[in-house]
Length: 139
Image (cartoon, rainbow, N blue to C red; front, side):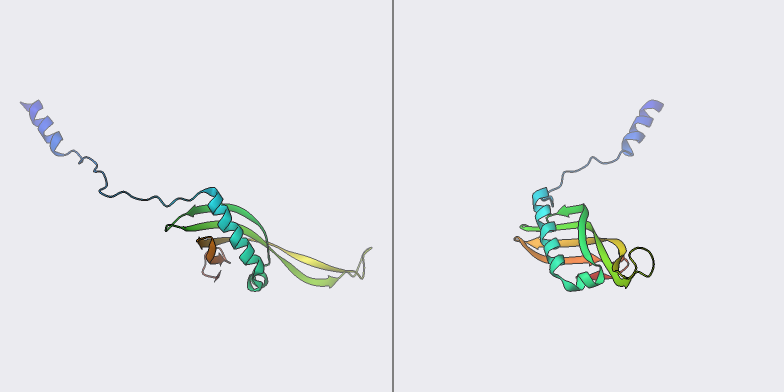
């Protein structure tokens, strides 16, 4: 009798069986070729924008693609990081073999995260986080 009571109590505290979703969910995926096309569109737009060059410098290379997807049919959104390099001001060397020649100092490189979205093969939006996500962006 005692064993039957334990089995009845254990059956009362079981988790319900998982249910299947009632509607099909479309996954937001895109192919790597579609993601690369959006990255190339964003690189071209960044290269043409003088404001980006003044703020961050010249785009050197894309470091890696962080994520990509298709938020709507025909649209592709990609998040990637890229490195930028700024040139310093020219200065004249005062000492050494090359005294009197003008050189340009490099100010190092900056890696920024870029979010780009294309719809129908055209770039719709491109935003660059200048300071690692602390609020300064270039659109």
